[in-house]
Image (cartoon, rainbow, N blue to C red):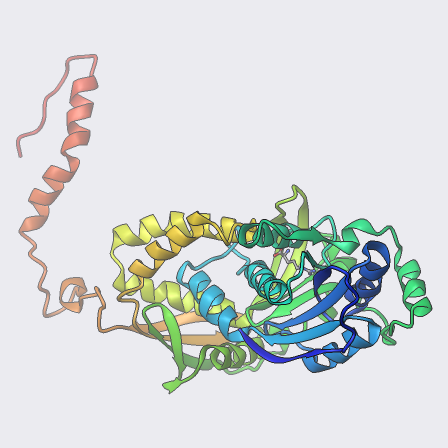
Length: 420
Ligand code: ARG
C-alpha cells in the first residue's frame, strides 16, 4: 500500500471518536461525511483508494476536507491489487458462474484492508462505506472488515438513511456539499483494473440487449477493426509478465491489454447473476484484459498440467470463485486454496499467442519449456514414437472391471468372456 498523500486539516482535538470512510468523491459518500458527523457525532477520516478506476484522488482529498473530513487520504493500492488479488484470481481462473471475472468482488476485500490499516493508524473506532442494502458489496465489506478487525464498528449510511435521491441533493445543497452538475449516469458503474461493471436502468430488463451507452471500455464487435490483432502473452509460474516479448509490470500489462482487447470488442459479458443476498440480477461487464488473460492462462495450463491436476483444479476453481464472490476472501479456505493453486503453477511458464478479432479472444498457439505435449507421441505421420503393441493389453485391463460386472450381474447364466 502506497500512501500518495495524506494530510490533516488542523481540526484536531474535537474529542470525538473517529470513523474511517471509504470515499469515492461522488455525491453519496460526500453526503455521508456530513451525515456521519450530524447523526453519529463522529470525526470523519476520508480515504480514497486507487484500484485503477478513473478519477482524481488528490482532488478527492480536497473535496472531503472542504465538506468537513478531519483528515483525508489518497492511497494507491493498484500494485497490491494486482499482486495479491488479481494474480491469485487468475491462477484460479476465477469466473463466477463461469462468466464473471469477479472484478468488483476481489477489489472489495482489498479496500476493506486499506480502511482497517487507516483505522489502526488513526485510532478510529468505526469504518463506513457507501454500499446499499441490496447488493453483494455491503456483505464483502462488512465480512472482510469483521475478519480483519472484529473490534471495529461498521456504519453503512446508505443502508440507514431514508433519503430519496432528491432529498439527498437537497441535503447536499443545504450543507454546502458540491453536487455534480452533469446529469447522473443512468447506470450503476464500478470500475477497476480487472473490469468495469454496469447495472441498473434499462439493463434491469433482462430480455433487452444492453445498449451501446452501457459500454465504455469496448467497441462494438461490429465496429472493431476488420483485421485481427495478435498478441503474445508471456507467463512465469502462472503470472503474466510480458506482451509481445516486452517485460511489463502487472499494472501496465493489464492497462495495455484492456485497451488492445477492448479496441477489438473483446470482454463484453451479459450475465443474469445470482447475488449472495438471494436476488437474481442482470449485470453487464467489460473485462477485456481479464477475459484474454484467463483464456491464455487456461490454455497454457492445458499444455503443462497433467490431466488429473486439470480436472481436480476445476472443482477448486469453482469453489474459489464462489468464496471470492461471497465475501469470504479473508478466510482459511481461500488461503488453503491459494497454496494449492500456487503449487499447480510451478511449471505454468511459457507463451500464448492470442488472436483478438471482432469480440473474440482466441488462443492460436502456445509453447512452454515444460510442455507435456510430445509430437513424437501425438503424430499420425512419420516419426511416431508411440508403442502400438501396448494398446491391446492396456485396453484389456482398462475394460476388465466392466466385463467382469456384466458377467457377474447376468441373471440368464448365458455367456462367458471371449478368449481372443
Ligand atoms: N454484481 C457485481 C458483483 O457483485 C458487480 C457489483 C458492482 N457494483 C456496482 N455498484 N455497480 O461483484
